[in-house]
Image 1 (tube, protein in one colour):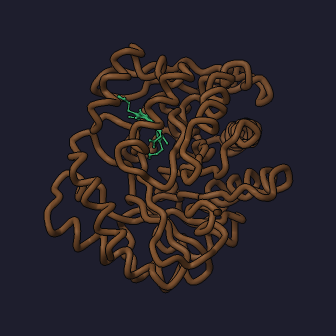
Image 2: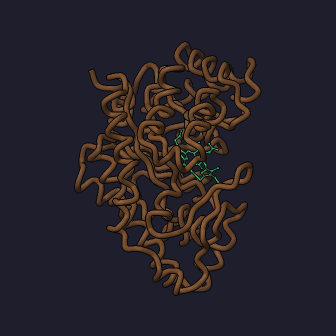
Length: 342
Ligand code: 1CP
């Protein structure tokens, strides 16, 4: 029996879509908060294979999702390339910034990443043994543009301003950084697949701030390069791309990059995406995460509307972005029930 997630990614139209949620292991779950407490800080949890596997399994045990996503973070790649990384409680990640050619040349080569990332590969190995046979294991990385925005600014930014400034001021230096992240990402995702990841996902959370030619050069081109390299080494591993807030650039994104599935945020309507994006291949999404906080009949109605809108083609049910810490776990159970009975 082929796993439901893999069937959707093989472009099969299913009566009930596979379901998982971005950030399904996270602070809205009391068992996650307890394990994180035990680990100490967030990064210690990421680098502790037993505990990282444990938090990955928690939402599977509680909700029976069709897929588990490796517990790690997109910012482990900058750290493996030599950036300093720490998390400020209540605020988010902080990294050493990239402001000069010297900062760029101080980065480690792409093939030096594995020593620091070995614990992540171990987490994948543990999960591929411990997951139920029907649950697919997803590995992931940040897409180069999104990772670069954090490396340049040293933190999350509302408009990715510092990255746009470097891109516009010194395109050659900026391209050097994108290329280094691209190479590291190929090696990182290959190693995850070799350790047992059955699907990989590229998170381009800030793709929406790239316009025109920049979108082609820094959202499409690096994804195409990563996907081509992975397909050469691992032709049977499906790849999900998430160019968040790409708007009408969602159209043709899978074809331009070679992705097997495009993940949709919640700014596009399911009906529009069914006609314009799903018509050429599998889509994932796109319930607004806010419904997991507010619940009620609106949650049920929205989950069922999305499920029905995408019923005519391959679809993976998910949120349009990560579930937030203030979400109610009971709403997750209600969402799953609504999708499976739609
Ligand atoms: O306090 C905590 O426990 C930390 C919260 C948290 C979690 C649960 C962070 C910090 N990262 C994660 C795990 C994580 N991050 C996963 C694990 C698997 C799962 O989905 O359950 C994944 C896939 C990510 C990916 C990630 N990290 C993205 C891309 C997806 C997205 O949300 O857009 C991004 C942008 C990050 C950076 C990051 N890590 C953590 C935070 C708070 C942020 C955002 C920082 C910012 O922009 O200000």
